[in-house]
Image (tube, rainbow, N blue to C red; front, side):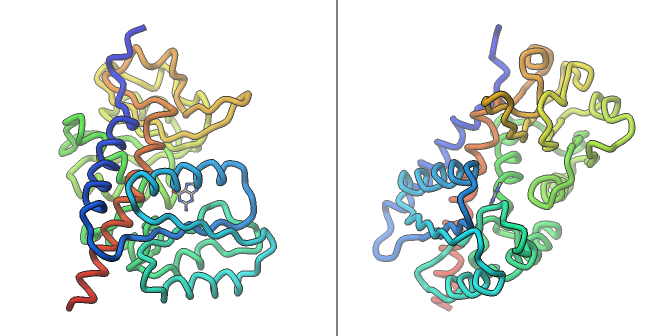
Length: 285
Ligand code: GUN
């Protein structure tokens, strides 16, 4: 099977991380610091955080991992974040999701300082993303746009179908692509005639979290597929695309693993570096 049509997030993320490392290495004095807040001990979160910390280590960004008990109250978690907001040496803060039931996730996103919002989940950041005035972009959508631009895939005037309307992926990505003059259709797994709508796309982004959702009937030969799925099936990590049957039928496709996942991490660190620079400019003025 020829795999010439793969878009390697592994390759592009390495290029981005190396550029960050070059900048951080040259810094005299203070270095950027990213604080990763974890609540409880979710096995998937443990894995993602391990990858994020490893990327920090590679670039020279200081990665700090704070773990709080599964039973922490809303008030106590908010107090911890407010403290981090005030610490001058902290430039980026993320709270790893999912959070336990007693925690109001949206409220947590709202109290992370906009100036340290490395995930880009604060509603004020998202508002600026919609208006195209932000310097911070949610990491997964940012990674997807970078993958498309890296392969010189035209966005202006292109029909993009996104399956998934989450606050983390679908909604910000749709707006970022609209700002690049793409024609965007946002679907979800309840959309009627999903297969038919998807099959007409130039770019199909699947962020549904449903293994083997995308079969040959969803695709066409000029299509680029971005697979955002992160599913565990029979102990194996796989995306939303039935890769074996679909990969030979399309122009470009991202693999899972090695596609969007590493790009999310690279863009998270890029956001941390941007926040660091923004804060340095703000303190000089
Ligand atoms: N859980 C799954 N994806 C993400 C992400 O991008 N950021 C955070 N904080 N938690 C997540």
